[in-house]
Length: 462
Ligand SMILES: *Cc1c(COP(=O)(O)O)cnc(C)c1O
Image (cartoon, rainbow, N blue to C red; front, side):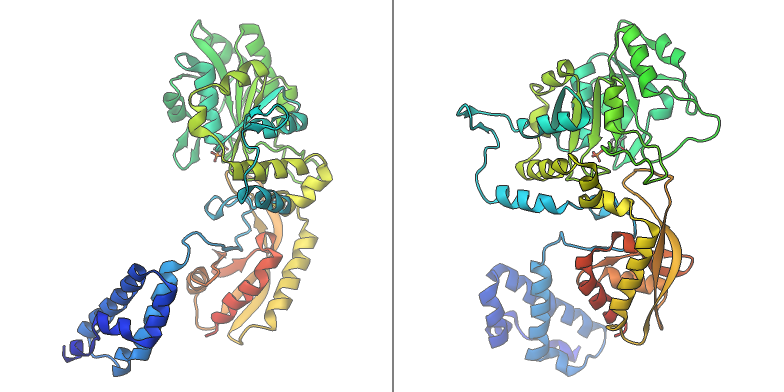
C-alpha cells in the first residue's frame, strides 16, 4: 500500500521530456488516455503486491506510455501471414488480389474518375457499365450487373424476379453458408414465398413439375458450396431444370456460390461447374461471389438474360447494395486476367495457390525452411510433414490438396503456446495444430512474408 504514493501524478508524467516528445507526435487526448492506462495498471499491480521500485521511474513509466501509444494508434485491421494452407480463408479476408489490381486501385483511389460519367456523350453514365461488357465476354451471358457480395446478388435477384410470388427450391439446397446467410431467410427478406420440394438427399424432375402453380415465379438452384450429400442421392441438374422451366414457363435462377470461370479439368480433382457451362445450359440468371474461386475483391456478380437483368438496374434495392469504385477497379483488373486462361491461372493468386502442384510446394517448403533456419535460435526447430491443404471459403469442401507442411517445434513450448505466441507477433502468423504439432503450409505463405515470418519465429526462442 505504501507504494501507491510512489505512483506519479498524470500532470507530472506529461511534463517529463520523453513523454512530452511523444505528446508532440500524437493527439493530446490519446496521449492522456495512454498515460492514464499505464498509471492505472501500475496502481492495480501495486495493490496486488510489492513491486520493484524501478517500475515507478521516469524511464519505466515513459517506456510504458510509448508502448501504450503505439498500441492505441496501430490500425486494428492489419496484415497477417496465412500459414494455414486454407486458400480462401474467410476469416483472413478470402482471396488476395492479383498484382494487376494494385495499379488499378492506385489509379482510381486518389483521383476523380469516370465512375458515373459517360466520357463519349458527356452525360451521366452508369457505374455498372465498366465491367458489364467484360463479364458478358467472359461468360457468354447477355447482361451482367455487380453488387456488394453474392448475398446481395441473391437478395436482389430474388426481389426483382419473384417478390410477392413463389420460388421452388429443392430441400437438398436449403443451405446455410455461414455468417447467417440462409436461403429460407433471404427468401423471406426478398418477399418471396419458399416452396420446398423433394427431400434432403433426393429431388426429382417431377417434384419441380408438380410444384408449379399460377403463383410460381422461379425455379431456384443453390450450389451446395460448403458440404456434400453422398450415398443415395439424386438432384436435378442445371440443363434439366432449364428444360423443366421452359416447359412450364418458369425462369431458372442459380446461386452458384463460388462461380469459377476456369475449367479445373486436369488441374484439380473436382468437377465444379463453370459459370460459362451454366450460361450455355440456358440458366436465366446466375449469381456468384467475387472473392471465392474468382480470386478478386468482395463482390457479387449477376449474369443472365437481358430481360431479367435490365430491371435489376432500376430496382430500388440496388442503391443499397451498390459496389464502390475501389472494388469496381479491382474487379475489372481481376476479370481482365481471365481473357487468357493461362494468365488467369498464373496471375490470380487464388488460382495459382489452389493449383500449385505438390512438387512445387515441397520445393517451396524446403526453400522457406532453408531461408529461415539461418536466422532462428537453437530452441526453434523446423521439420517437414506430409499433409493436405483446403480451398476454404465454403468452396470445394471435399478437396484435399497434397502439400508438404513445415512443423515448428520450440523447446519448452507446447504447440498451443507456439500458436498463441505467433498469433500475437507483430505481423501475426496463423498456422494450424494437427496431431500435437504446430504446422505451417507453404501453399498460402507469400514471398513477401518470409522476413516477418523469420522475425516471428526467431522471437519464439526468446
Ligand atoms: C458463399 C456463398 C454465398 C454468399 O456469398 P458472399 O459473397 O459471401 O456474400 C451465397 N450462396 C452460396 C451458394 C455461396 O457459396
